[in-house]
Amino acid sequence: MSAELQDSTLLCDQSLIDGVWCDARSGLAFDVKNPASSEVLAQVPDMGAVDARTAVEAAAAAFKDWRRRSARERMAILRRWHQQIIDNADDLALLLTLEQGKPLAEARAEVLSGANFVDWFAAEAMRVMGDILPPADNSRREWSTRHPIGVVAAITPWNFPSSMVTRKVAPALAAGCTVVLKPAEDTPLSALALAVLAERAGVPAGVFNVVTASHGAEVGGELTSNPQVRKLSFTGSTAVGKLLMAQCAATVKKVSLELGGNAPFLVFEDADLDEAVRGAIAIKFYNTGQTCICANRIMVHERVYDAFLERLARAVGALTLGEGTGDGVTQGPLINPAAFAKVSSLVEDAVSSGATVVTGGGGDAGLGGTFYPLTVLGDVTPAMKVFNTEIFGPVAPVYRFSDEDEAIRLANDTPYGLAAYAYTRDLGRIFRLNEQLEYGMVGVNTSRFVSETVPFGGVKESGIGREGSVYGIDEFLETRYLCLAGL
Ligand code: ADP
Image (cartoon, rainbow, N blue to C red; front, side, top):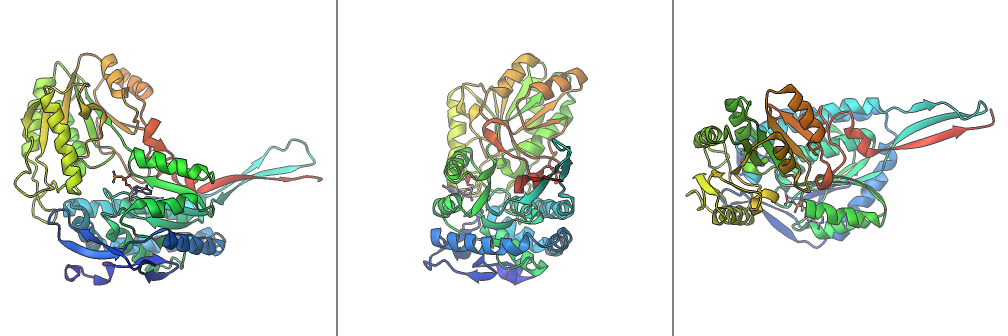
């Protein structure tokens, strides 16, 4: 497979600790497989607590120097990293498609949008400022100052193996922190390739460490209990996020958590239906439905329900399922057989409780065990499991509502609060929705609204903290207070 890469050194089979590419202390390794074909792409180190501790020690030692570098120097190094990513975007995209399954064009878009975070936070390094405070009495002078928090543990998921890494590592490095990253076991190759490029860009030894592991728990246990780690930035499931938050309590680490979602997608009776269908396709089937901001509950006003459903099913018919490297493919496989089983059982539950299959449904789409057919379900009700479960698959359940109050009530009837979408042309309603929807992000008449410039994050059990935007670097800084008396 490496022969297909222009630069075969971007396919790594070792982890990076303290500037040294290394195997696990135990000598163990695990397979990284292509989800479309089960082909083994590489074997990477199966690291444990001892390796994670070594990485934390390296990051703690490197922090002493990195935090003292000028902001301009950190910016310059991050800019070089950004350029390395751009220059190697084709190889990074191919690696991403092979280990994750998404179509090549989407993989390339992810690599480039991930690179935008590096560019953005390179500039943010220069904008970390404090305040001069009004003193309590005139014999004092008082300041608030901002400092890098220290060693950061970053744990990332498999659905965006490239951009989830850059949007944690870039702000951490910009702030003057050092990082130990544990990428998802399904997709460590993108993270390792990014680390190669960071090294080439001049990121010093120990500043950015990558520890691969086949199971998160052991490495995660070390990263969350080690007192030298001062911050955890995690993206993944709500269940694991809660566990890690509890584990971080013993050493009172600062945490950022980007967890699950259950996005409502509301289509009101005054919506531009074609736009709404385009928006639903774009966000429901994004990454084959495997994102935390995917539309999870499509709710349509009863007056336009039939028309919307028919147009949605027609639009789904124009999508093409297949291997991500294939021509014209818009939808890849699910990440693994367990994901397929979960999606199948949700559809079976809905259908046995009265949902109708408008298109798609069970089976394996004739392409192998990880390809779930693109599916639209009608007559879905809140009593079905699919209402409060993150589907993470290409299944669009469509619900009916009769008025705005009911739509808002249903939308908020979940412990999650990440992204919500609404299609309407009523300005008053748009303001009511923004005030009443309990979500960190609301898209009105659009469903693709994430970039490095906006604060990404959730409320309720969808998480804590924001990534990207001018607020993103705050997660890696702490505010201190200096008082000078006796003047
Ligand atoms: P998903 O359902 O998207 O796979 P997970 O929350 O299971 O989400 O995984 C997200 C990341 O968390 C991955 O890198 C995974 O290895 C890691 N992870 C899973 N369980 C643990 C754990 N107990 N401790 C630390 N990391 C974990």
